[in-house]
Image 1: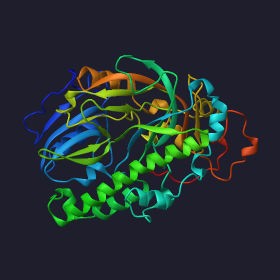
Image 2 (image 1 turned 30 degrees about the vertical axis):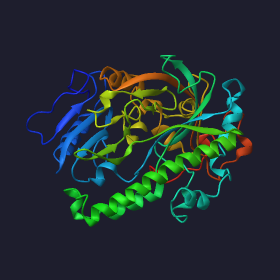
Image 3 (image 1 turned 45 degrees about the vertical axis):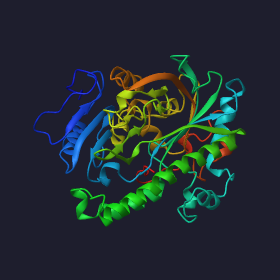
Image 4 (image 1 turned 120 degrees about the vertical axis):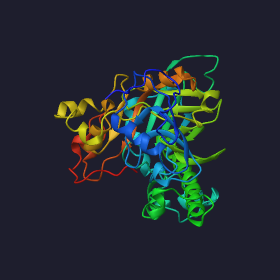
Length: 411
């Protein structure tokens, strides 16, 4: 269903709600009723004083995704198990004019096979324990995570868009803390106190915060190592432009802001807002209006349809599934999981352009550039694939993957 709020920008919640809700989306945005009900439940949690809801709002397991929540108590369930998940944008020293998409597809299909760093040494150098999930470092995971090669499609304001080069190539990496975050959340999820929140000064609160901070650092490092592997595969170098987490708790006046699927930004910083693998992503500048929005903006388009529903909407035959592997810019998808190809189809997501328009009209962001997807790596095939049969430009086609039971984890 659509949302009942006509005006863009913050509007106060009704008096019956325990906390103030600020709505940063217009009537043009697709918002499910279930997400709005979850939003009300979040606003009624103990210690919550303010909630911001963004245009990518959609239902989640423990509460909606696309929110920022200020609370004097800690609510680990609002952040979930992928603590520290975020988006990192990297500039490559390879110019767009030298890119051959088919060759890039072949090379990026080998991202996670790149032996270009020592995980334990990298962890130690970053101040993390060398035995902290070293085998998972530099891996993307499943669900909506990806590593995408992008180019600039449009610059909106040449004077302000200093963060991007029209002639350059970029990597947008979306991943999180993998099994580490899942373990940390699992240790606290069973506690009875989680329903009312944790006192930050309590032993349980301090313990979760400490592990949370480690997860955030690990996830950021993981995105960097994914980019290092992608750059190694492409025979170039990657330089970080910006790293923006969207699943974390940040200490702020009045308590902690819990970000669930909302990019944690500061005024005048830049941030990526992801579309889908067949639609534009955006680079924006956060404005002073992000103060009232609890330092949050959308991190992406947000889901329009859940995963189960997508299996009845697209990919009903081989030709439809083949079409999902390409986009209108000549871009290609690398994904060895046929179910994931269907569940992550572009039509599963909202219009990222509308998300950015809502954020712009609400005074939260200034759009800098639109980015087109050229190669999207989600998950390479398993060893059952006969790679010698792959046609040029069609490496790792999902049709060649052995059928698997069950669903893929979200990473």
